[in-house]
Length: 160
Image (cartoon, rainbow, N blue to C red; front, top):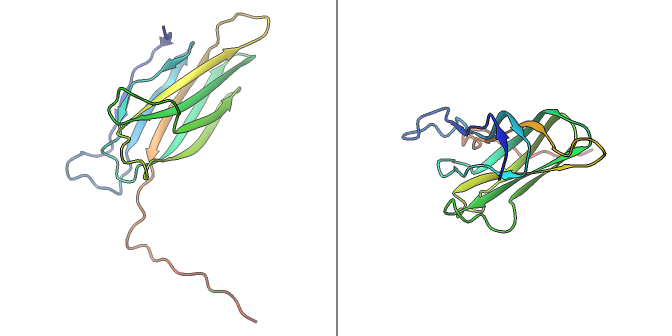
């Protein structure tokens, strides 16, 4: 059984869903900040059907850890919130130390994915206590669509 301390799920909406402004990004706290992770576990399923672009900036922040351990975090997608398949949609590089890692998750070509869930795996080695411990959080921020009014010009090659 997963052992978590001070873990609670939160969905931060920066706007109302009805009549929402698509230029205001959706922000999801998949693993709440300062969550104490002490064993392998799956987070709760999060509904992403309200997103406009289905593209997210994923930010994993590790704020505390002990020596000789690693953290693997992956994001899994599902159509129904129950079956998350056999392969993750994103694997964040393995973490050993404090810091922040950012990656982009693009689900724009996967319209069947309506739910996301994080999975974390901890590993510990060495001669000290066998229980791993990380304090971390995973935040997803929707990348807003590019404005139709944004002028785009082709690069002009200089000729000489």
